[in-house]
Amino acid sequence: MDFKNILLKEEGNIAIVTINRESKLNALNTETILELTCLFDSLYSKDIRCCILTGAGNKAFVAGADISEMANMNVIEAKEFANRGHRLMNIIENAPFPVIAAVNGYALGGGSEIALACDFIYASNNAKFGLPEVGLGVFPGFGGTQRLTKRVGPAKAKELILSGEMIDACTALDLGIVNKVVELDKLMDETLNIAKKIASKAPYAVKLAKELIELATNVDLKRGLKVEADYFSLCFATEDQKEGMKAFLEKRKAEFKGN
Ligand code: COA
Image (cartoon, rainbow, N blue to C red; front, side, top):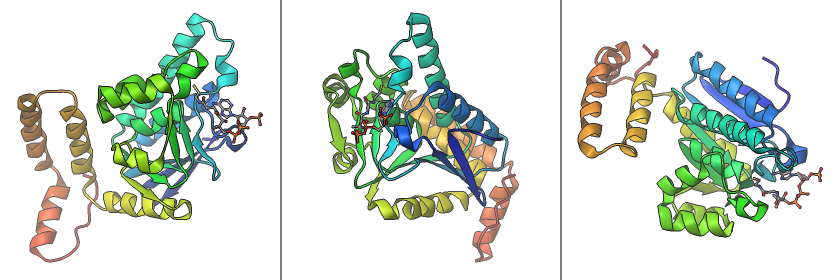
């Protein structure tokens, strides 16, 4: 598949997706949103065990949705734009493998929103997060009002979204938006390290655990525990469960095949 605005590199079972519109600070125009949606859709059916999402260059992860494209939208076009953004964020969030955002600079507006749709975020020390949309006469429309609130709670989400204030990587770390902050030149290595660890584990167990953690943010404990027991037992239908436990007992490294 050829894409104009994104790059895909596969290292074993790890997919590295780079948003590649560096001259526009990787801003998400419709074409890029559709390409990313199409790419993630295609990754669903491949043996991908972890994915890293990053931006081209050293300055920006994604500087937001494309303002030049949004400026002249009518109501119907704006709704379609938001819906396309939601479809992309949902396809990332619901991917059957973990997706890690490697945030290498500005993650503003849609940039923060796409990072929040990933399973977790590693950031470089020059990263900046923010949802500046109220300064443009709108508000975050790619899931930011919902996902940021779930991540940091309503009071902090209101402070950030209603002021449009930008925060640095360490503040984002303190708020639990980011899992780890590293120097820019170490970001991809650090992200690859954790991606490799994840990719070496039993893929089906990883997939189900991801789903359950997501579920925990949406349902009560009783329901969550019921589904946990169901999913736990499902692992026992896999070869990887047999291999994982057998390898432990035989004091060797498990070879997971994803079945
Ligand atoms: N949409 C469209 N184009 C964007 C963009 C966006 N969200 N963010 C940056 N760009 C473009 C700029 O228009 C500029 O293009 P040009 O060279 O053709 O004029 C190019 O990217 C470089 O950006 P520039 O503003 O010159 O860089 P800077 O270092 O001075 O400032 C930012 C960097 C990120 C602070 C600034 O670009 C910015 O505020 N961007 C918008 C952030 C935003 O509001 N995002 C939410 C959108 S809903």
